[in-house]
Length: 121
Image (tube, rainbow, N blue to C red; front, side, top):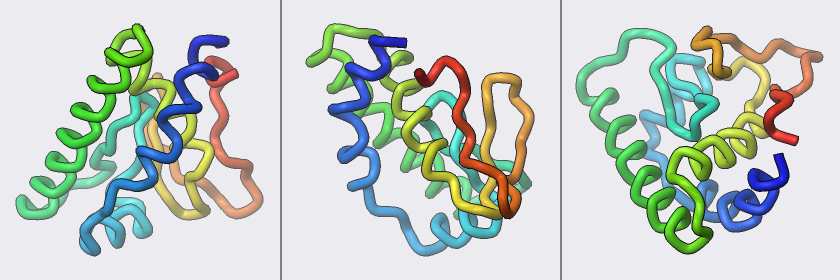
């Protein structure tokens, strides 16, 4: 989508600039937490309540960022989230979990390219 490419320019740096607590970073590396198609983190497995709260706090920060960017770009918050999801999915490392629009959790396998859904064009 052409609009997604337009929005991505403002998002890529902002999304990567957000610090992640070490516990969340470890959960991402281990595949317990992963990137979702909509630009938010999701839980691919049950988490301790403290870790779940950290994931929720990151998603609140992302929602705030997406809201600000949507106002500046004149697009919906959901479009900003999906555009960010496209960028973040392209950075999923081997062994990490991710979710596409079908709602199924997957893990990127060795030799498998990073996920690139057709709507991310």
